[in-house]
Amino acid sequence: MNYLAFDIGGTNTKYAVVSEDGEILKKKIAPTPESYGQLLRFITNVYSEERPSPYIGLSCPGIYDPGRNQITGSSALAYLIEKDIVGDIREMLQGVDVFIENDGNCALLGEVWKGHARGLENAAIIVVGSAVGGGAMVNGKLLRGAFLNGGEFGYMLIDNDVERESFHSFGGKSGLNGLLAFARKNGYPAANGVELFEMIESDGRLAGLIQKQLLYTAIGIINLQYILDPAVIIIGGAISRNQTYMEMLERAIDQVMKKRENYKVRPRIVPARHSNDANLLGAVYVIKERIGLK
Image 1: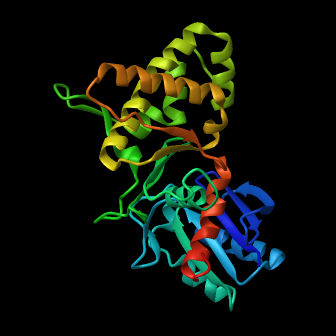
Image 2: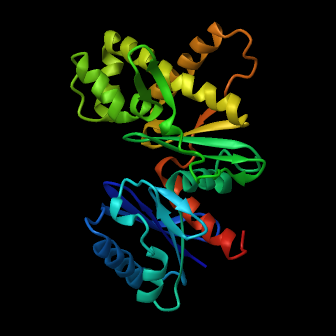
C-alpha cells in the first residue's frame, strides 16, 4: 500500500507518494495556497489525481492539539489555526482518512522511522529553516508538554542583555534569516543560504564572522543536551546538507565546551538523513502509527 503525504510550509508545499517501506516514489513541490479554501482544494485535487490509498498524512506548521485534532496557537499559516482541516478533507473525500501532526514532530518521526533516530528512546531534531523548529522524543514518546509547546526550540532566549531588557530568540539568531541579516549587516548581501556559504568558501573574514555567530547555535544545542539528554541531536532543514555548515557547527560546539570543563557530555549532532524529506516520511509514519501498522 502507498500513502499520500503533504509537507505544508509557509512558502511552499511538498507532496509525495510514499511506499509501505518508506520509499518516496513520486514527489512534487508547489507554492503554498494563499487561503484555507485553496489549500483544501489543492490537497483534494492532488489526492484525486494520485489515489494511492485511503490515507493522507499532513505535516503542518503550528502547535498540534491531539485532543482537538487541530492546529492551534501560532502558525506560519494563520489560516490553519483552529480549522478542522481533517474533518473538512474527510467531507470532501468520502472514505479517505486524514492524519495531521506538527512539522517539527514529523521531521523527527521521519528520522525515527528511517533515519538517525531509528531504535533510539531519546532523540531531538533542530530544523533550521528561515527560523528554527524542532521536536523531541523522551523515553520513546514525543514530548508535547502541558501546553503543547514541547519541541518549540526556536523560542529559547539565547542572547540577552538584562540591564537593557534586550532579549533574542534561538530561532532569530540561528535561523537562516538571522544568519543572512547578520551577513548583510557586515557587508555581505547574500540572497539565500546557498549564496551565503559560497561566499564563506572564498572569504575568510565572512567565514570568521559566521563561525562566531554559530556560537549561539552551539549554546542552544548544548542547552538542549542538558535539558533533554538525547542520544543524538539531528540537524534538519536544507542547510544540514551543507558540509561546511555542519563542520563550522561542530567547531562552535567544541569552542563552547572547552570553556565549560565541567560539562562532560558533548552533544552528538548529525545531519538529517532525509533532509527536507523527513517531514514527508514522518507524515506517513503518523498514518501507520495511528492505524496500527507501525
